[in-house]
Amino acid sequence: QVRLRESGGDSVQPGGSLRLTCSSSGPFNDYCVGWFRQPPGKERVGIAKFDSATGQTWYRDSVKGRFTLIQDRAKNTMYLQMNDLKLEDTAVYYCADDCSGENRGQGTQVTVSS
Image 1 (tube, rainbow, N blue to C red):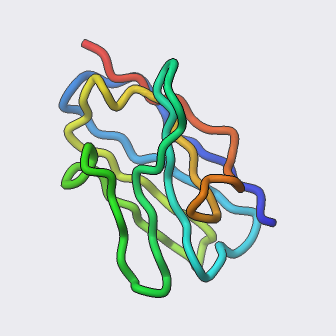
Image 2: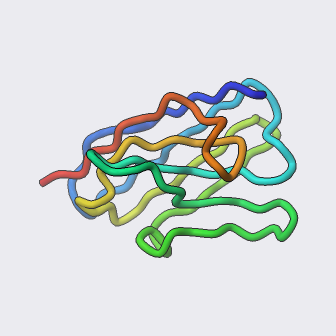
């Protein structure tokens, strides 16, 4: 299994943007990779998942149109571009080398507040 490390979390105002980075110790798997988040007091949920078999990226409805999963496999790196951030986007964000979230990093905190 690869080791993952997320970075780029910060405190921003509503409407702001952030780009999170997921650095991997080796190549991502050829099946599915994704981003997850865990808001305060809530369960962790998937928000973006890339399925290599279909070449499609699934997005949770609450982030669709605002967040984009970007891969740079040559650099063993994945990004999450987040635009038009909302208060409800406040969470710890994780990247995973699977679509269950099992093999994930330690997370990076994103706080959206006015």
